Length: 387
Ligand code: NM2
Ligand code: OGA
Ligand code: ZN
Image (cartoon, rainbow, N blue to C red; front, side, top):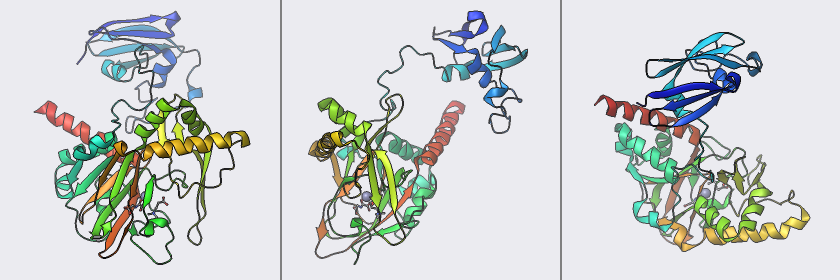
């Protein structure tokens, strides 16, 4: 653990500067520190939730007096309250925001790996049987999904609905109008083109929902037909290429709202208005919505911008279909794949003829996947440290 080398205040106590022994230096504002005071009147000791409103904290808060306690704690007194609180120096280090060398692109999280066809031979995979028994194996699988946005699972129980047991490993099924889980096979009078033998261009599912399900799973019970191979493409990679090759096209898709709709079955009329490329306030790439079947009438794009939008959409679609971006595989009975549905698009080639194809699908969400992952990682770290 890093020790403290110097702690002082500036600007009449409005700023605290902390220097650690590796010469990492970070400034903190008094209001930020006061807001995060780890005392039982500010943060509930049981659950860490804040007990006060922002207006309960003095706007003119200043730090009056700093004391280093041992090598790992800093004691601060806040005025005008005269409140003394002890901060953990390693907590401050982990949560510092005064970083000059902050990644200014800030485009995707640094641990996200954008991939193309090279992932074909290294598609992350885990066995259901092992992941259920071994939390290290589960942790690795979830971490791969977090980083690559896609993974396979093998050795699933060969029974209808087993897909929900995979979701149980990390989170909760997101039930929708399609059911808790749904059958993906050729049907008479299909309510969705997924329930036919047609090929499906790579897409993210349910862009017409807001919020969209952030994880999609597809499991295989039978697949003896000709065709029906699965395709996955990292849309974050595709968008990166679009941004490089045509910044204007990127700007249009990120800057104009698209409309998505689904009204294929009785009693359902889903609509959303969201950009095809969604960026955060700092320019971070947050999500892609790409689905040729479900793009609704675009009604909220200015008349003059419409041709540019369609041109940009075509460009992105062309990139999405570049062979060097595609990873393909044919699901076998007992196998499943999962995608981050805000990022990795999936599709299939057409199938027909003799044999049968029976997949099941389900939705879930990334928040609980990442939560489970974080808990398992902390557990692993603890085990390593105590070993
Ligand atoms: N199904 C498989 O988002 C979509 O409409 C793709 C979804 C019907 C649940 C298909
Ligand atoms: C879907 C889908 C692909 C397939 O159900 O959403 O994209 O392989 N299916 O059937
Ligand atoms: Zn789909």
